[in-house]
Image (tube, rainbow, N blue to C red; front, side, top):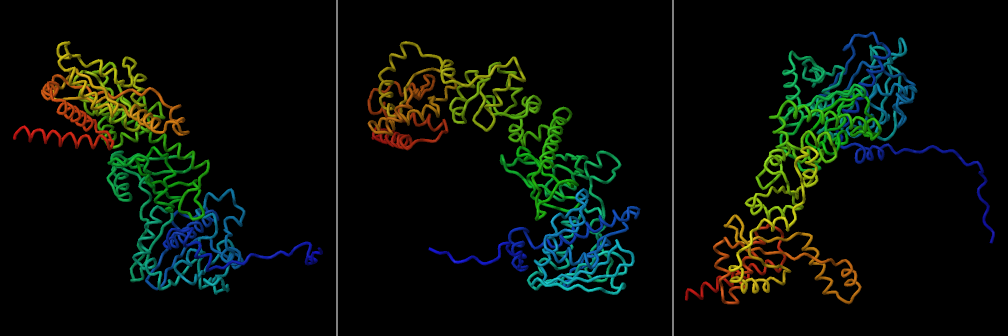
Length: 615
């Protein structure tokens, strides 16, 4: 078979990508930017970067001599700056070429940290609210440079022309937008004012706003960041930072931690939440980069365990992503995260050493967060483990207080196990801690590291039953018939029955049963049902000798003394089932369907017996 000749073009042909600007703007609006409101942030950012470049060009200029002016009257939105400006060639190179940044084009990579913007696509965000962008600029780099005008349209076309010097007497840039009818939500004067304060309240250059009503421009950022101001006393500073945290975060902080990392130019505050939050729920933090708000939901700036604080920070060296709405994950961000974690640990250490009242309020609200930290941080463990609250047979108390009373501390493996034994263990003088909650069992086992004179062991059912007193031989023989009927009735639950005496006397019975034992009995039952098949062989290979549950009846309880004297077989059986059901309910563990059915049946049978007796 003969193939047709290939086209004669061995070297290939170079072609240029064609960009559909409307499609690109739609892509930005739906996938890069979270909201059309970012157009004002991008305009402010470009103005700030232009001012930064102007200051590097004229370093002797007085601080505050260059600024940014916003104007919005409902028909136009205008942003004017006294920055470095643009020449005609700059307009072609930087405004008409998507993706090129003047910062990059000038090959000042070593100075890029001075600028907020890095990607050269910010001006496109203006097409989210307007069909045309009008730019008038005059360069400060060239003496007697003319003013130049650039008009870009949403269809991808643009025009450039040179203007008289009077069109722009001083260096700088003015960007004017004529909003579309559907963009009024984002371009009304009140909204522009709100967005300017939202994004630019911490900018280092003066920013003013004019709504076109004839008044003078109002300062958007009249004061520097609260941590950059001078205060008469440390107390006044602390109160001012707390008030700022409440204003921007919406809650009154339990305490305010000042953050300062000179290596990356980061300053700010961490506000301790006054109430507990779900474990692992990470709050967003307000992160500014060189004064411009980057994100209100930057959860990556702190480690996961620090969910008890929310931060407001301003940084110099953190890199924003392309959308400038989150932080780029790099070594610098990882180092900042570690350094801020150390600041939080230092605050906890200070509170433990010098402010026990603050520490108590903090632990009351955030003990779970501290427990998660103590598991992995030996310093925090040694410092705070004695102060952390636990559920014990002495009530909710600290391990330090609990260990003073109990030289041997027993810890349960689950909440239900603790609830089964708490009342009886307390009456027997045993010190038991509920280890069923997250981190608790692991932390209790590390108590000897802090208090070497205290020993810790897992609670074993045999430990508890060893503290229950046996009944005398005569009582045991008198109750033998009843106990045999009770064992027969409860055999379906793999439950043995014993008679003991223990406190409190108000407890008629104690059900000693572990989750692991129940699982093993369930597995054994499945193996018996599947005997002979492949699944049955697998379960049989896994089967262990499962410990039986124990229903321990309390001879000191009047109800039990009455029950063991019952001669009627059916009534004895029913009473044993009722005692088992009550003990299972008191353990507060999930009931199996058979147990729920037994409780209902035994109640109805006892009720029917009582009614027959009355008749």
